Image (cartoon, rainbow, N blue to C red; front, side, top):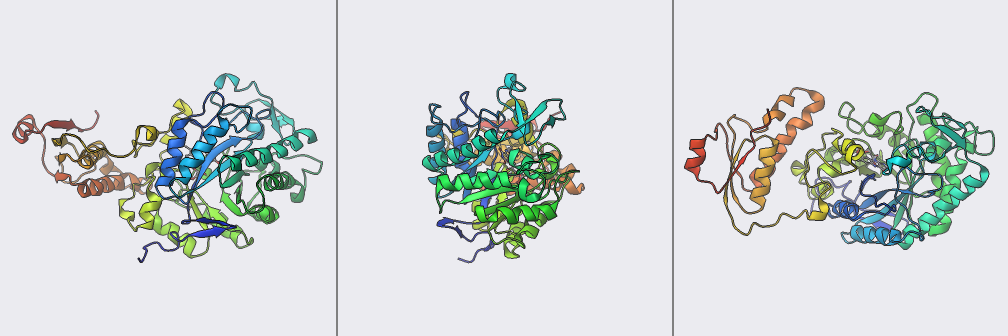
Length: 483
Ligand SMILES: Cc1cc2nc3c(=O)[nH]c(=O)nc-3n(C[C@H](O)[C@H](O)[C@H](O)COP(=O)(O)O)c2cc1C
């Protein structure tokens, strides 16, 4: 079979692990953490869906390696916590079941511990530890980590990695970017130490290397270790790409994949998670530049949603692997659709940040364009309806289109009426605004999917009471928008 996107669809072997394509699922966490810090069942189902959608590796988001000094992203993997190993094992199983490589991200928030917790009452109850003493922008004092604590945290990374392997994970991602602890050590902005961990780049990178060595000792020689870093911090006083390259060169002997993200969670959120005002793939150049200076495989991420762009990145050698986070919320089947050349069927992420906002507000996973996200445990398969009905849908905006699409997939005979000459409803008004183009295109994609599923679309047709009475549907869905 000739593939439409052959490069991004091709397998890659790292060490003894073969990944079925170059499309990996990035960590997305912060929800469904049980009270004792385990991965909750909804999260297991969430990660399973990523694997089912064709991603070659699925990264389970942040596991906190050292709870004594960190309280932000509160998954634990600790023998003393009943169920923590079981929860991790079930999650790894669920990912592997669909042919993807399960990977676990290991992290420590350092001085930003406690800024984002499930237990808000503990928010400032913890002592914040960073490379250097100081004051956080929110007025929380930060204590400098002692050598003893550094040694303890380094050991904890190894311990957590060993347990991850024991749970069935086949890769680990060490989070060295986005402003968290390892990044704080790498950064001249946070790291003012005068001992062997501060000052020169060689010293600032020491903590990262010790962590990677500890992890390697725990997992053995053939287990892939990925190092996630920010290619540049984009913050005054932080490191730039030139130093980013040197950091990658310094750590490459200790990692199997260099994963190049960008910026920090705290200061450059819209670059780390490129917003709709940023170009797609705006951070790819960081990975491309780093790739010129290292020999290990390099991964890139940031606002990637377009298969042709991803194919170009791999084909031109800018990176070896592409990662997506939000696009796999919008359409978890994106990798499968790319592999099969069904790119026209991909529902694109709007980069609207509903996922982030809902995580912060309600600790749930939600997506504007995909109603199944956060509800994976309820089942994402469309069940055939026991009784087939004639369904009339009034209004072909995004709600009407999606309802019609779902009803048709359930086997109903669906007629979708739109009083205007084009589908899309309110989304049509976004057509002329370049950064909102994807909102307009969402209507077109839903239309295509609805038609494929067998929906009969009647344009220039208003559903009046008389029209509905004449059609005699068994169900009427009124999707005429909000006022
Ligand atoms: C809802 C959500 C949760 C995230 N959680 C994590 C996380 O726990 N750890 C992490 O390293 N990155 C996290 N990220 C960042 C992503 O891994 C990724 O770097 C970022 O979203 C940019 O990729 P994208 O443009 O494909 O979304 C999260 C992103 C989102 C949208």
